[in-house]
Length: 239
Image (cartoon, rainbow, N blue to C red; front, top):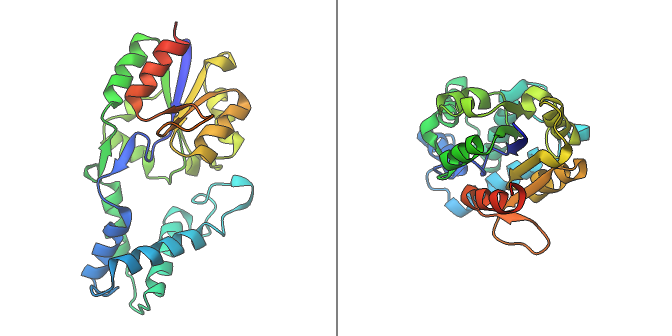
């Protein structure tokens, strides 16, 4: 293979079928952890506040938030849920069984939908001798989810921040993408993701050709979906 295309996962090739907050709210309401009378707008506000607070206390130097949490992968999410419920003035105890139910939903492949052009990209990559890889900020559950969705087999390299120990925007995880391949010339590495500060600028520092999953943005190379990405690669880089 003469080219290597790395992809982000969340909101790039995999999408939740339902807003994650609503999933949390539904289960917490079912067990009377939070009140069903709580306004949805307020719940969303509290959840956003909890998420922002959780992300103010991340490990230094872009060390992975899941791998370096004092209580591991599950500990990160448990802290988030407990922070949210405290904001609702809930004093109810969230049992391990309730946490298990929440986690199991996000582990379920039926909770997710695959980008509609994904298999077109796989076919395009095979036809044009392009290896596919993943570089994702995700906890330890991702690899099994990819296998359950039956798509892990399409990727030559899968780099997950919780396994690697550093998360985007650390250059270390993008460097590992290069080191884990056959050391192609740097102009043969591509990256595609949906967050400009995580997926667009960092790989460019190393020489990747990166593309942002977005509507057109001035001064940024964008592709709204995998179909458009295929077209760009075909017209500009595979001639």
